[in-house]
Amino acid sequence: MIRGKITTNKSQYGYQRQKEREPRSCIRYKCGLINTIADVLRQRPGWTELTRKNFMVKNLKRFRKQLERESGRLEAAKCDFFPKTFELPSEYHLFVEEFRRNPGITWIMKPVARSQGKGIFLFRKLKDIIDWRKDGSRTDEQRDEIPVENYVAQRYIENPYLIGGRKFDLRVYVLVTSYIPLRAWLYRDGFARFSNTRFTLSSIDDQYIHLTNVAIQKTAPDYDPEKGCKWMIQQLRQYLIAKHGPVAVETLFQNMDNIFIKSLQSVQKIIINDKHCFELYGYDILLDEDLKPWLLEVNASPSLTASSQEDYDLKCRLLEDTLHVVDMEGRLSGKEKWVGGFDLMWNDGPVSRDDGQLDTVSNGNFMANTHIGCINDRKKNLRQLMKTASKKSSTAQ
Image 1: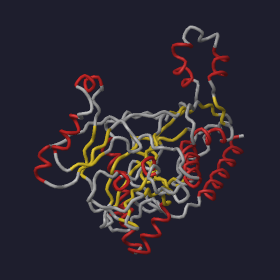
Image 2: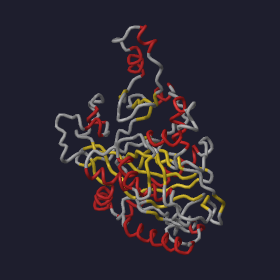
Image 3: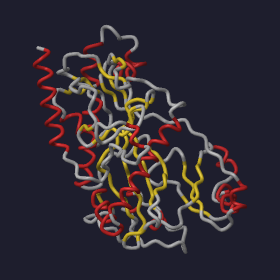
Image 4: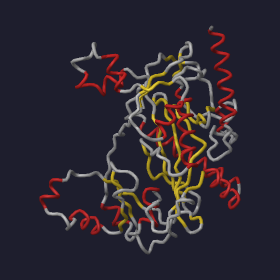
């Protein structure tokens, strides 16, 4: 996502922060999406949508010759905020030797450029891949006409943690406002997506067993739209604490924190860092029966379409808090560790929950500034931020 140009400087805290300036009363945006993003932007005080009609009226004389050819680029240039999807550079390899070392295990194939579970399938033998590539239902000419599609092959987790006999995975949101230096925020809310059918490895062709995508599960014959297939992550945390104790659950979420940071650091050198852009990632995490978290994938454009009222409320809060962190209005000081439902977990180094020194990591007392699945008193936090912003505005006047 792209935000308007803001002058920044290095502070003593080691990250990019805004220079002191007066808060902005009007933010112009362009949004061609019809989902929670559009709803949140339209309801945000002081934000004005730049439509094609008013853009053309304002700029017809100046850009008459270029308007038809470059209208999309010009509209974006006149905006302070322009939601956009970026594709991360990636390269995947399938090693035949891995199959030879681990015969009989299950693998999962995922198309790189598709979403919502489309094109995913499980297999156990290389012969299955050869048969799939041949696809006898198509002629040679048809196969030549269809462009080659990139897939990623992953070892399938055969011992997932089950609740009620059903498999699930977690969707967790991470907001990155800078890669150089790395500055990342973790959202407290999220959800667990359950399969609609009890887990078994006896059938690897049944998508309702192995894929937790809502787009797949809602097509199941016995799917109940009233109940859905989701738990809020707070519910899951309470369930796990009741069954395994707080220490085991705290260790689990600390291991998840490590996954978030290591995955971002692994691509830090190849991501084009632009101080005018930010990205909201959707992490998919699977737990195995030993409470070990596994990273399934990182979505650079997570779905923000709601499947229920509860899901709609969560995603609206997520987007509102994202805009609070990005701070187009210039309300924040740059020293905040908690904004709405977001906790600053990495700021060119680990961020602690208190103001203690970071060297406390060595003696085991360091606690990361993450509270995923904990009670989210975001309204209280936002009231405090708005109060601070009001004082800042009054002082400036």
